Length: 103
Image 1 (cartoon, rainbow, N blue to C red):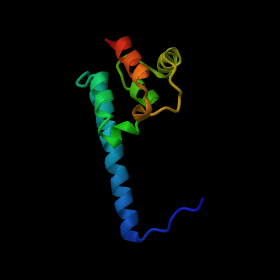
Image 2: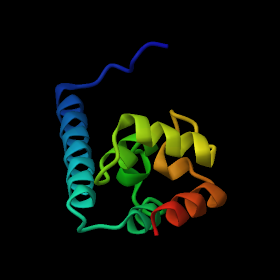
Image 3: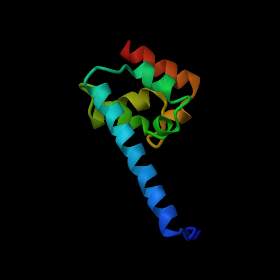
């Protein structure tokens, strides 16, 4: 599938939008790592914020204190979450399983 051709203005706007989304997700992960934000808050926020909803669950878990790649993978296996799953695509049982594990 070919990419649509964009005018320079459209391309610049898309680049700015992507940069804002990356910064927002980075700030959210930093806040989670510092303990300023709880996992349950992020899961609730994902229901209304498209930028948060597009964050991979693995990246979210890895940004939590004391959780690295291996532990995040174990948690996702235990809760039945696919490695490619994004936060916005979690089902209610998966959300509840994650919240139960951390609180």
